[in-house]
Amino acid sequence: MQIRVLDASHGWRWITQGLALFRQNPAQWALLLGALFIGSRILLAIPYLGLLVVLVTPNFIAGLTHGAQALEQGKPLRWGYLASGFLKNAGHLVTLGGVSLLGHFLMLLAMTTVAGDALSEIIATMNAGAVTEETMAAMRTAAPRLMLSTLVGLGVVLPVLLAVWFAPMLVFFDDLRPPRALLASLWACMRNILPMLVYTIALLGPLLVLTQIGVAFTRQPDVGIWLLSPVLVPSLYVSYRDIFVAQPPEESATPQ
Image (cartoon, rainbow, N blue to C red):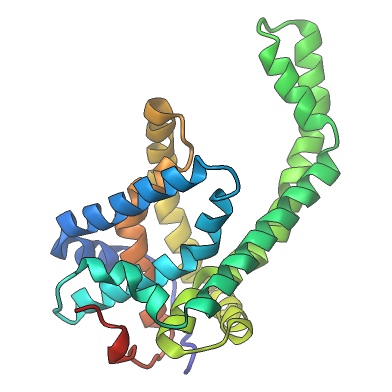
């Protein structure tokens, strides 16, 4: 396995090529991702089972990118690809979910430690209703600490996000163990920072718009990323394929 260093233009190519994979079978993509969305909503509504969603997310990412690979190879996109990540290296993929969960916990811990009572002060001020000079003063006092806590939280979670970005594909397609997959993903993202920035910036605008739409109609802030997932998932596979010289997945993991 090698890590290719690409120029910035590849970040945009990942999106256009991912969109092309989506257009090959948009209805099936919508059905697969819609089923995952509904399933995740059900689990998140049950106490403590919401953690399961985070733990098995890498398994579903592996399966969906397996489906994207199949489309690229001229094969049909079947429902069975949702199970691919549970048929091959499933335990290692769940381990990646645990790493992601730990990273987000450390982010929240760092943010609450730095913010102190600032967050609760801002929430209490907003719930107070009418904006007065006193409430504005309270918000101005709490805002700097809240901004600092956000930056600290981002600094904690960003390396984790980069480490798990390509890790599910590396575990599934290349049979890497979690530690090596996490390090390879982090190193690949760092070496390809320019295309990663182009990719992120290009998707940020649509994500913000879709998030606002999702909040307006469902009051769920993560609906935006689900609406963007028909492009995000195939482009994730394209970026993996572009950067890594990988071995094809085993035939035993291919759905019938």
